[in-house]
Structure formats: C-alpha cells, structure tokens
Image (cartoon, rainbow, N blue to C red; front, side, top):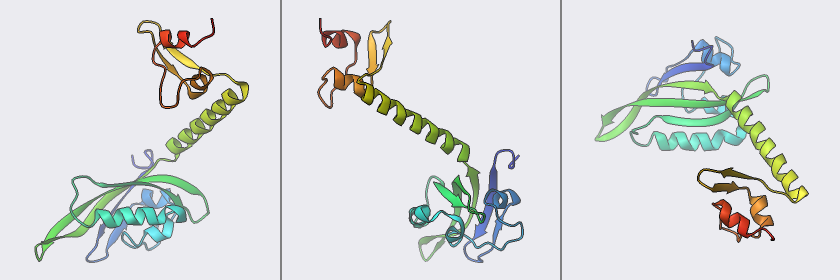
Length: 183
C-alpha cells in the first residue's frame, strides 16, 4: 500500500538516537536500503533542499518546544543523491513525558508523503494562469463569468481595469457592469 501511495513511514527515539526508516521512505528519497540514517532533526541536513532547510528546521524547533494538539506537518523539497528534486510532505507526532515538571519529547512516529504530482499540477496551472493574464493584458481584453439566475458576475482584473473600476472595488452583478459600458 505505501508504495502505491508513495509514502514511507519512520519512527525515532530522541533519547537513544535509534530510528527506523521504512524501505518505501528510503526509496522515495532515493536512499540505499541499508544506509545509516540519523534521527530528526539531524536527518534534515541530508536530504532537505538547501533553500527549504532552515524553514523546516525552524518549524521543527518550534514543534518540539511544547506538546501540540496537532502533528508536525511541513511541505518541502527533498534532494535525492542523484540530484533530482521531489516535493514531499512530512507528518509526525511526538510522545512526551514530564521531567522536572517540564514536558520533554521522547519519541516520534511519522509519514513522508510524495506530493510531487500535486505540486507539478499546481505549477502548470500557475504558468497557464500567468500566460492567460499576460495575453489578456497585451490584447486589452478581460473575462467574466455570469450567473444568469442570480445576475452575479465575477470579473478578472483586466476587465475591471478596462471598465475603470476603482482599485479595491469589485464588480459583483451584471447591472453594475452594463452601466459602465458606453451606450
């Protein structure tokens, strides 16, 4: 199941420094099945893309300061040994114990999930949207969607700019829009 879902599991003990990374976890990151791997957060230096490394490490430091009601969850780029970059989401829950009246993280259990396909789709959609906006601006046109039943419209910024709608205001119904069209 985890291979089909492109996810891997891991656990670690912060006191003993023991850790386990499933074969699917290792395969996701392009790591050898028998390569020794450290427990979090030391492992971040090994495969988190350099630009994302400090952000993820800072999020981890905040997460382990006190018990949380939610798991650690971060998206980042992972750099595989062969140089390829993939997007992943890491989720982790910690076990805590009291030491001297203070909560201390002891161990963790988590998932590493490939979100590469989602990020690629989002990237392609963003590029298409940017191209459409550039084409609309270059052609001096705009677009709108009109719900005939409610008379509500949704205009893009290009159309609102063409109709001289003041910045910060929005056209919301067809009657308002028609009033802005030259007779």
